[in-house]
Image (tube, rainbow, N blue to C red):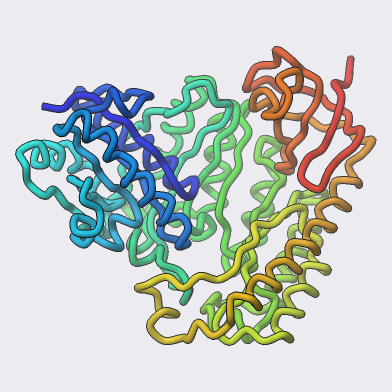
Length: 443
């Protein structure tokens, strides 16, 4: 039976965390993870379906494994994650290299699926669960030298934004037991992690219900995690504006090891577009949450997601988005143009009626505006001293180190030999729109 495996991961941090869950499951069954695909008996590709280009990248990799199978026909190729869930059996027809298809809630069945595939069967399990959270699995870190680690606290999503495939590929929302979350955080800490990020499609709506009527919400979980690992930075992603309560913000304020950074996707600045997206908040409500963040957490870093060209978006809707960005003054943003995803409410009921040229032009306007705002935000940091968690050497210059402030701003500074996980006091001397440039502050 195959005993070595190789994993490639595409998409969000949730997928990165899931790959570590899969690695732990297979290692418990006696498999060994390898770093080179040509050494593997089982090749797994963890996929994303949120945007079309993410699926195309994954498909390209799966097709590329034909080279491996040509050398060793017995090698098994598996597709995991959201694309596997979305396409199911069709993947066997569309991608001739594929032997295994497994959805996000079926990873415990993966060893059995590998055995079936080794016998020449089509091995598939894309059943969604209302209970599976992998509470007894301590993930196996893919990069044991990384300063940061990810811990999933919820799975699935109940928001059903009209453009989003996630509720259909990851199922309904459910929360992990707090004890399981804390144990995983402590395991990461023991393994050398200096920072953990709590993950979920909407972490704000975390709500665990135990036996005997015990409950815990997200502010409670933040406090439990922060107290359990007081020397570890704590982050979280992603938040939904509707559920970003003052109690969450006060929980952050109460614990110095919870990073002062909130990623709060806005998606659009137009109430009409937000309604068609089924985002369940208005522009005014969103801006109220930003005001609360800045009042309760002065100096908090803020970032967002925004995309242009959704169904029915007019020029006045686009201008409303630009105006919101000006008012919000985010430190950073992930910016996209809308791509219709099969299986969503929007694909079934809302026309994709903004042409590609208009989408491209609107996206460029958003990018240019946010670039200016990000540069202004970073210029305000010049002269200040920041505590930076080192992530490793700079990607452009090995004589320099890179790391992040608690506000999630990237800093590059002279620091050859600085190891991932070290904390450094850095005085900011300059910046670009994306990066702070600094020097070690002595003393």
